[in-house]
Image (cartoon, rainbow, N blue to C red):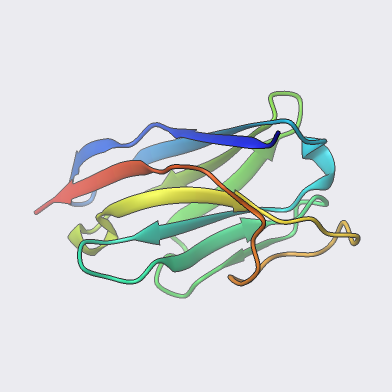
Length: 125
């Protein structure tokens, strides 16, 4: 049974930094691409970033240059380092994964197979 558990959310001031983590179990983590999504208050859930099994990465324009996704296969964990945070980054952050046959595959938002329950990030102005 695949489980994804996010942690590391919290309250941070405008311009601050935070790192959220997602610990995975029940899957061969090193072969799975991983992604981060977020859902702000009153908004639709949106794709944020992803990393392939081979560590190719992709970011949406709104976080490019501020957020960094990484993975530690020894710990079955994917991270999202968030710098220069803005109030509009306030959201519940979810990690997700999808079965993929290509280790270079980087998800771009659709068709994820497994989801975590999320961790709340609040950026105060």
